[in-house]
Structure formats: C-alpha cells, structure tokens
Length: 327
Image (cartoon, rainbow, N blue to C red; front, top):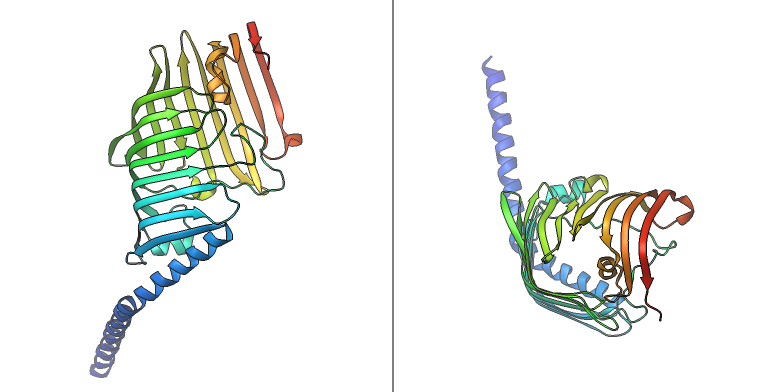
C-alpha cells in the first residue's frame, strides 16, 4: 500500500513538473517568438499584396495567438489593379486560435473593430452593373462573419460612369448582447440616386443580422433586410428582405449553399402593386429609365449560380403602362 501511494505521489509530482516546464517553454515561446511571428505575418501580407499588384505599408501588432492589430495601413497599386487606394487607421481582430485551427476562420473570429477606413475601388474593365458570374471561376461564400463587429467612420467608393457608388462615413455596432445601429452619412448608387443621413436599428445574434425600417423616402422603405450567417460553418447563407413603396411591396428570400465550385441557389420573390420606376435604382439604372406599374411578380428559381442550364422554376409578372427610355 505504502509503495503504491509513493508511486502515485511521484507520478503526480512528475506530471506537475512537466506542466510547469511546458508552461515555462510556452511563456518563453510567446516572449521571444512573438516578434518573429509578427514579422512573418508582415512579410506574408506583403507577398500576397505584390501578387495583386499592390504596395502595402502598415504596422502589425498583437499577441498573434488571440488577436492581431493593424495600424496605419496604406495600399496603392503598382500595376493593373481594381484597387485605387486603401487607407485604414486601425483594425483589430480577436479570435480563438484553437477554433481557427480546428474549424477555420468562418467561426473563429470573436470580434472585429475598424476605425477611420477609406477604400476606393476602380474596376475599369467593366462598369458596375448586375451581370452573371464567370462559370470558370470558383464561387465561395465570404468567410469573415465575426461574433461582434464595430466600424467607425468608414468610406467605400467604387468608381463608375456616370456616377460612382459611394457609402460615406459608415458607422455600425453589431453586438449579440444588445441592439445596435447602422448609419451612413451619404449613400449614392450608380444610377445617381442619393440619400443623406440614413440610419436604422439592427440586431446581430448568432451571426444573424437583421436591419429594420430603412427609410428611403416618405412612402418608401425596407421593413427589414436580413443576412443570416448562423450556418456559415456549413457554408450556408440566407438573405431575406421586405420592401414597401407607395401602396405596394416586394418580399423575397435567397438561400445560398456552396456546391460543385459554385453556389446552389434558391430564389423566391413576391411583389404586388409596385411602381416600376422604384426598381431602377436596384438594377443600377438611371431614375426614370423604366416606368409603369408592376401589378404582380412571382419568382421561384433554383440552380447553380454560375450554370444557367441547371436553373429551373418560374417567373411571372403582370405589368401595366410599361415604358422604357430609348437610348
């Protein structure tokens, strides 16, 4: 009995010493290898930026194992690029390392904070218009849906003719613990339609973003817009909306699921008594380009997003007094 007890005590002491030694080694690794890991991350970012014809300048900080902080980031093209300029004063990402290693980035990011950012894109090859995706290019859902997101004073500009797309001085705070708000000082679409000082309440529980009551005009608003990324780990994303204008409305849902290097897509739209002119801005068309009354719209479609031959379903519309501006 005494021998067994002594052996057990020695085993516990050995295990304790091993854990202490492992902790010391881990501490030394964190102390001496953190600058090396930050330097490696800096070089990797420069390498991939150069492949996209971009010159990057920034300072990288953080613990590496739980967060990364980027300060004073500046990006400029060195050759053909869709990027005109990127400037960010501060960006911080907090993440779980073990979740990142086991499940990937889609569910690993706990929070993201961005302060004073300006992004200018210039896709000179083609104007900013809705168009079918390239069937030869793999389509994936975005990976980054943090549990919490805070953006203060961000501006996005996409060069276009005759009007740029502009989202100026965007601010948002999305936290699953309480309701937040999204505000935009100026929103300009490529059709020339412009809104000032837009704001709307938002909730963001379990990566499910719901923005309510987006007022575009006295008789025009989105009752809600919903981006549900709660199943992004399974590579699924759902989009829902309810749009009201005058005495009519359009509601719809889009379900996206990664499949066969594309997105398995299901679309359902219902509309009734909607002025056709209201649709111009969402199709990147000038105001008044189409006019008339859409008395009814029913859309039920499904298939692979990049392969039109796989699509099946139905589209039915009833129009009155329809007119299209001649070009």
